[in-house]
Length: 125
Image 1 (cartoon, rainbow, N blue to C red):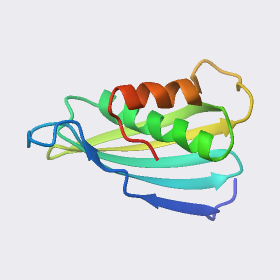
Image 2: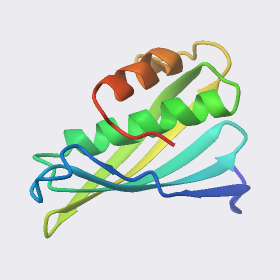
Image 3: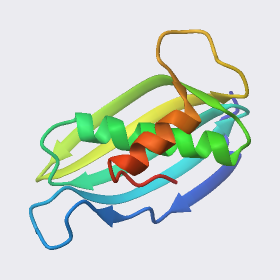
Image 4: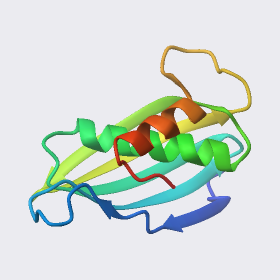
């Protein structure tokens, strides 16, 4: 893997689950970096999440949409690190993207996942 970031796509993928409720889950953005070929890093930020699962879901939605943008149909989860400080949750996730179903148990079908994210009102890239 090259040490330099090949491409950076800073995104303002912000939205709110319930804008009228200040305590509602708030999606504060996605920063996407293509690391090398098919390896992609996603940094996501949320507020008012109940737990780290919301962070993981947000990163997965970003990865699925990114795979589609790049013309791929699948992604495979490599790792996600979740941190919470003062009600602000952050995630640092890495996925591989591919045109065919990759090996492994932590794979996602990008089209199915993006549709599910839309149904659950989770923003994507």
